[in-house]
Image 1 (tube, rainbow over the protein chains, first blue to last red):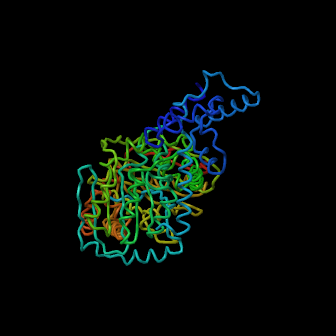
Image 2: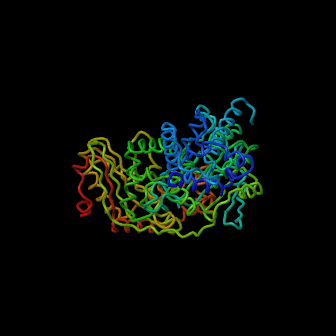
Image 3: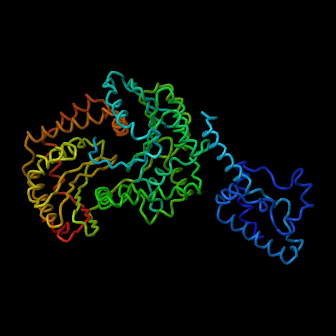
Length: 125
Length: 452
């Protein structure tokens, strides 16, 4: 559980301010969740987002402990996959633990970039 | 009433107008009316404690100043440097605007936003073209009441804070002001308006939010509008949603101590101070007249050593170039009255001893009536001059609502009695002093040795 404590606390704070709405416990996410493989490696869905400049900037904005937990989970998953094994079933990610901690930051970065582009193109006044 | 030494640090990072327009800007300031006296100031105190004041000055530029009655004196020991940090970080994102958005919006409406703070007050001043003042006031209210203080933005802006500190440390004339305050006051007023280096790494988002929560309260906020309609200003005041707070403030206590910073600079700065009087004290004007009578920065003759009392007596003792002035600051509950000496390593000891001799001479025989009249005239000129400009008007208003009426101010200077001024100087000469010095102090005696 050590790999998720700070992330869950952070996500609770984000949910309080209304930034994120749900986890994998609703709708389409709930249906797809048991069919996915990432949960067997103890990863969250936000851990899988492909890195580009926007995502890198969003990662820079994560609080320190959330970022370190993400690194831990990724390192553990890479290790498992190289040894062609998965975590024991007790340690698989549960749907309520699959919080969306990175998406709000990615949205924020994208919005800021859009604002800049709009001003530079003269669309805003 | 008047502070001749008010160290103000300004952040003009949000200036939208490029510097080459500075000359036309000041020209329009000069054309700005003397009509200030024809209209009267309208004041309203709102339910949440905000004081709203407006004056129509027929200027093409409208100004809204949000003045908060908080400054570096309200910092606790752990929070030292918070007011400097908030000054530097004031252009960062707010709830509804990003940092980029603030700059562009201000550019678009032709506005300029500057933050300046003293030990007791922080002023957020927005100047804009008259038609766009409501949009400017939106942005002003966001910056004052809803900054987000995101931790990564603060980390990115830290280098700006450190740059300001680097510039500050190169200037002994700025450091001497902070040092004399540190030497003279036990708490609150001893805090520097620049962040101390040892605390810079602690100035993080939570600490700054905590400082804001305690001190940026609506009962400490005054909204001053120049060239703004009074009802409009009351509407703008609605957007400044700040926590209500108590107005308790730590009282400043004077101590006599000595603060010496040694280095190898041949140009030595020394400041000697005694406890002065507060703004509302009846002796406040007498202290200002005394400072002018000795010779202050306000009655200098440019490029000369001047003909003030200190120039004619103390300055003659120097073999190399030197400078001697007096200074007087009036804070809300106390003040500082003293002297600032600049001299070379070998001269500074004689200058300091000569200063004490001159001070005791004035204490025993007092100023002559002619000297006092001359001092009153120069005080009247500098007060009237400062009330002529918008920023001087705003500064004067925050000191007291009656400090902005030019005729009354001039009359009250005239009403100062010579006896009061001489009694004040006598009291200063015999009370406890504090000393601050920076430079090559090999020839500067200790405060104890100077006072005999």
